[in-house]
Amino acid sequence: MTNTYVVEVIKALKPAERQEMAFFLDSPLYNKGGNSKELVRLYQVILNASPEFSDNLLDKGKVYFDVFPDQKMVPGKLEKLMADLNKLLRVYCLTQQYFSESKEDVQQVDWARWLRERGLSNRAHQLMVKLKPQEANDPKESLDLHRTNLLIAEEVHLWELNYNQAKGDLHIPDLIYCLDLYYHNYRTELANRYLLQQKATELPVGDFFETGVQVYQDTSILLQISKKIFELLKGDPPTGEDIQFLMELLSSHEESLSFETLDHFYAYLRNFCTLVINAGYADFIPVLHQINKDNLERGFLFFLGKIPPHAYLNLVQIATRAKEYAWARKFTEDYKGMIVGGDEAEFFYRLNMAQCLFSLGQFEEALDYLPEASSNTHYHHIIRRLELKIYYELRSELLEYKLDAFRKFIERTAPKSLAANIRTMHLNFLKTLLQLSQSPMKDRDRSARLVKRIEEKKFVAERAWLMEKARELG
Image 1 (spheres, rainbow, N blue to C red):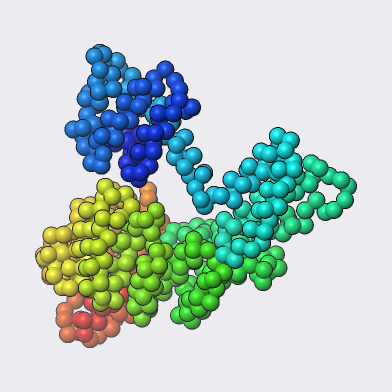
Image 2 (cartoon, rainbow, N blue to C red):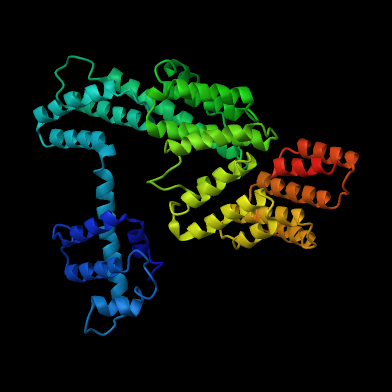
């Protein structure tokens, strides 16, 4: 039962939420069917297995007789109860999400709508009057703010429309203004996401930008920065001056943007730095490392108090390339228990440790830490590339065999799951690494030719490392 939907949802709950869910099930308002007692027992059995949720404690037969004592096992009976429990879990979780503090304005708008629709127009109007100043005075710009402002303006318009006294503008100009601000900001953000995705996969080119956005740039700093990001994504890649300009733009307007919006914009900034580094500009490695440290300290890299796996790996990749070995090792240790989806924490910890040891030249130890292949294609590629780099440094006889095996894997899986540019990146990496392994040392001409070939390739994985190894040959 440990991998069932209902158990996975309960695992995702925080300890305090698990206890609240028990109180939720005790209420006859929601848990009012004929199997209400059995649902309480089932949930308690699963709760008693936390936090490990071991196979032994959640053995299907054991759970069945804990929930239905002194009864014969009936096929499908436990599964039906689990499905009912999952429905109640969904009600609880969505209720908690809707009534969180971050949704307070939306709740107020919905409450005003309920009051209006039930004929309590004066109460609805009083509430909307209170909401409008919040709309105008909030200095922290974000997409969520513009979405909420649109909901507020729409409700004011509907109230005035329902009680139309044939005078006034029915709040329509303000509603259109809020609609435009939300539309242009959201549309620009979607265009930016699409252009960023184009850096990783082949997609049709689209003309997403509209001249209408120019009208609102002075009104919305959010839109101004989004437009700058759009312009940078159209380039290939952004220049150092572009990145410096964006850093200064963000820094100068931090007081005008919400925490979530800053978090989002800094993610774009980190991506731009990565694009520049991948294009061969290694000078930006320490710049990105400093941005990473700043963003980590300010909480921009977290999700619900935990750090996503890709961020956990990326910070160490950049730190080691910036030669901040002690920082990378300490970060790996300090945050290994805070990774989103903790079931795979050991996998990511071992991968980071392998990277740290590799960067210190401890190649045999790095090989020992390297985890087994991942079902996630992206992480599998990271493991295989690191393994190949280790074998190259060790001058291992296994290198050529490993290169061939990875090449066949890429060629076999590419049509199904890899974009053409990602496939090209890996094949160029493999081809270049093979050429490096077959090149004699102290051959300056050969070294210069290899450096030139790497620089000329638009797509190549591990570009900076390959350049370093090519220069060492001379």
